[in-house]
View 1 (cartoon, one colour):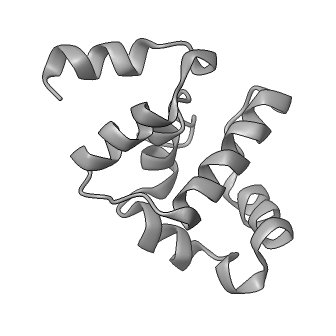
View 2 (cartoon, rainbow, N blue to C red):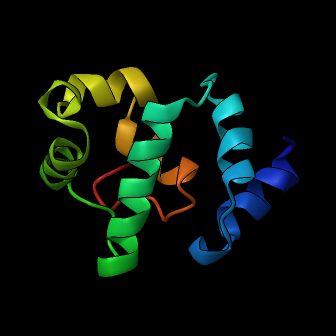
Length: 103
């Protein structure tokens, strides 16, 4: 993805997001999306659709607990899936605005 494509992907309305967008962005982060990634992306997008906010970390962990169980409901699991700053990476993959608490 060149710089122009990145600008277009970032400027898209979150409702226009498609799974292919996440796959292309994930490639740039060196992430190969699997079922665990897609479940978290879906959780985040559903939360955003309801509240127009990216879920705070504690809320996200609780949502993952309900959907996937306690073994995956922790910050370490999110860091393994989305490396570096999980909220920032996850927001980009999910086609959502950058969370307010990310620089």
